Length: 121
Image (cartoon, rainbow, N blue to C red):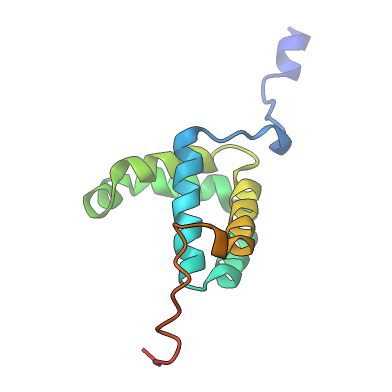
């Protein structure tokens, strides 16, 4: 009984996080879009400041899933919510965001077209 109780509330270490192929693809797409819009710093600050609330954010996504599913791709919301429930997901998201920013010019999915820089809109 004592052995069972010791592991009753065991949580995987964040270093053991390994995303699924769907999660990695979703994060890649989100990061590419953030980098394309030149919003890497604000996104990093937002994710880092919400780090302690990662699991809570996942629960909010699950509870608002019906609305998101009507507006966006439902499987992406499920994938993101499932990923955020696991320790290490926030670190993975931040790492991928920084990697995408550093390798912006070498990835075809991140457009480096800055034709909108001259326009205030």
